[in-house]
Length: 150
Image 1 (cartoon, rainbow, N blue to C red):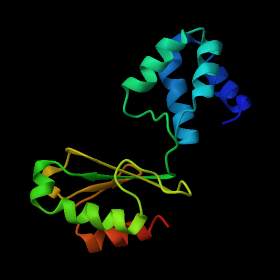
Image 2 (image 1 turned 90 degrees about the vertical axis):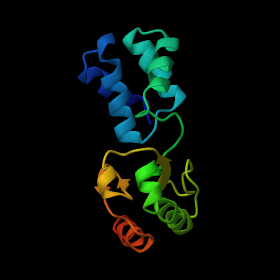
Image 3 (image 1 turned 30 degrees about the horizontal axis):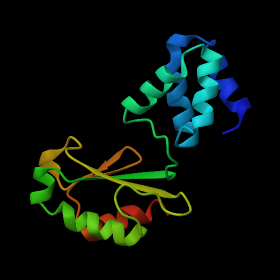
Image 4 (image 1 turned 180 degrees about the horizontal axis):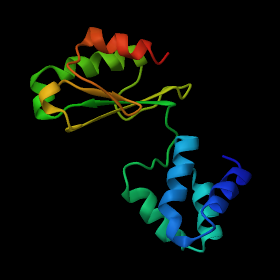
């Protein structure tokens, strides 16, 4: 992410230190991750100590300090989804994308994550792609969903 873009984001928030989280959210949204250089620039421009910027960036799960794919795929592996077959869904998605949970593919198209409860226990197994929930997943349905993002 270039310095001009970061400057524009900070300027939209009038350079207020209190807008730190909003500035980081915009950078994350545009870039799909926040490079260390961007954190340093935000620290300098907002007058917030770098340690505080890092504290915020590492505390909230919404921020990533490593490159993420353009499409983020989350697979619920909580108890309810697990009982209904989420491991088979996860295995299929890992096979289709060629990556394991916690990884991003080589062309930065997809990132894959797994985690407990995504909020729809009665509709599991569930996956979420770019914030859109897909319920009652099977390996075959998961393949169809991912085709929409290719």
